[in-house]
Image 1 (cartoon, rainbow, N blue to C red):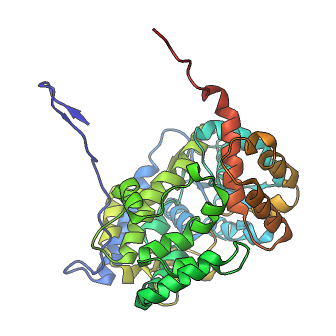
Image 2: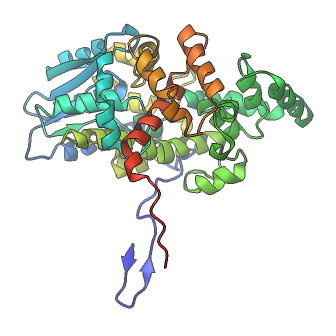
Image 3: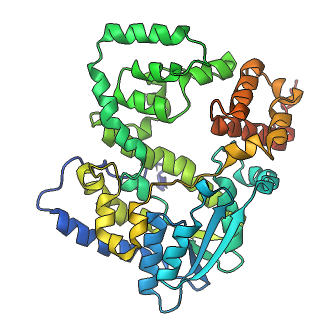
Length: 425
C-alpha cells in the first residue's frame, strides 16, 4: 500500500507469480533452459547462505531438499549441517534416503525420530498456529525446527519444488479428468441421481459425484480436497459452504485463472493458494515458534519466474514423474536411488496412531459433550467416521485430525471468543 502526501491511497500486489506457460518461450531450447535453471538454482541457494549466525538445512531425502543440500555443499568450505526427521513406522520413514545424501556430501548430519507421544506437543502447536490449522505435518515440522535450533539459527529447506515444477501426483490425474468432458450431460445427471441415493458408506459414492462435475477443474478439487458428500453428511447446515462455482470464484478469485488449461489452473492454484495458505504458513510458524529462521531457495522470485516460463511438457515425464527439467538440471548431483524412488510427501502416521495410542485422546475430544454441543457436526455421522477408521474400512485420518485441531483451537481460545457485552445507552 502506498500513501501519498495528498491523501491518495493505492493498494495492490507488489509481485505476482506469472501464469505457468503451456509452450516454450521463443528461442529457448530445453538444453539452454536446463543450464539456466542450474545456474539460477545455485545462485538462489548462494544468497540464502549469507548469514552471520550458524546455518544448516532440513534434509528429508526427497529431490528438493537433497538438491538444496547438494548445492550448499558445493559452495561451502565447511561441512553443511543437515537435520532429518523420521518415524518408527517404516512406510513413513525417509531417514535412509537422507543418509545417502548426507554421506555423499559428508555433511554434519543429525536425526530425530517422532513417536506418538509427540501428541503432547499439540497444545503448544495450537497456540503458535493462532488459527484453526489442520496440516498434520506441523508436528514433525515443529520437532525438526526445535531440534535444528539447538545447533543453528538459520535453515534452508526445499519447499516450493512440487508447485513450481509439477511434482505432485495429482497433476497427472488431470488428463484423465479432462476425458470425462465427453460424458453426455444426460448421463451425468443420471449418475448424480444414483450417487445421491447411495448411503455414504457405499464405496464409489464420492467418485460418482466427481464424475458428474461440469469441468475438469471441479473434478480436480472434488477428488483432491474434502468431498462434497462428506461435508454434507458431517456438517450442520449453518456450517456447510455452498457448492457452486460462483462461491469458489468469489472466495478464491485471486488463485483461479480464466481461459487457461486445467493443468495450468491447477499448477497456479497449488502454487498461490495451497503453498502460501498452508505449507509456508506451517513452516513459518513452526520454525519461528522454535526461534529458527527458515529460508526457501526454490521460492526465489527469479527462479520462480523462470520456472513459470517452462512448459508443462518439460516438467512432467510421460512415465508419470514430475520435476523432470529440475532433475535434468541438478539430478546428476544426487544418489541415483533418489531419482527412481516413489514420491513420498512429508506424511505423518496419524492414521496408525488414531487406531492405537491416540484412540482415546481422539474420542475423548470429538465425542465429548462439549464438542457436540457446539452444533458443528452431526454426532451420528462423526461416530461413523471414527468407527470406519478404527476398523480399517476407510482411512479418515485427515478428516478426524481436522476436527480434532478445530476443537483444540476452540478450547484454547474460547475464553477470548465469548460474546462482547451489550452496551446500552
